[in-house]
Length: 189
Image 1: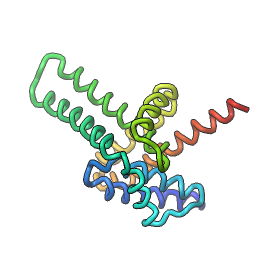
Image 2 (image 1 turned 90 degrees about the vertical axis):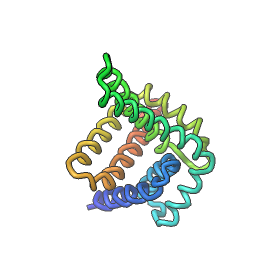
Image 3 (image 1 turned 180 degrees about the horizontal axis):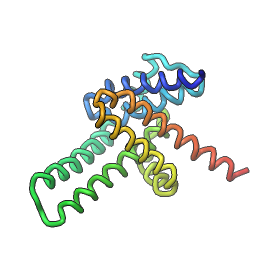
């Protein structure tokens, strides 16, 4: 019975992240606040709406530039795939596949950075560190790829489920980062 409140908080986090990320340039701060919301629930801290939007504000400090870059990166990859689907070019299928893999890799790095965010962190350092962790922890990255795959399949079947499923992906990102911390702590014992 204790797991249902966590699921409910994940659903709430999904709704709040979608609202906070509507301007697009606030994608990173919204994801970071969503992950912090899930962590706060697990740690027994406040999950009030005001606390969520305070986290968004804190994460937005210095995060709008990198967030714009991330959104531009996703946009460029999506535009490449869209053009290659309409215009048959030699090798277009391979380039499209590479673009999709790059987008998934970028999503994994962004989720890991968001799950690792805490107030006062610099986004550029978080993103670099998340990229290193993504390469150094392939099993954790694969777990996030699977979570993203489930998000895509469920959303494809029923588009309104993108909102609650986003909260589940945030929970997966938090779980992967906590798993990494516990593994690292166990190695030092």
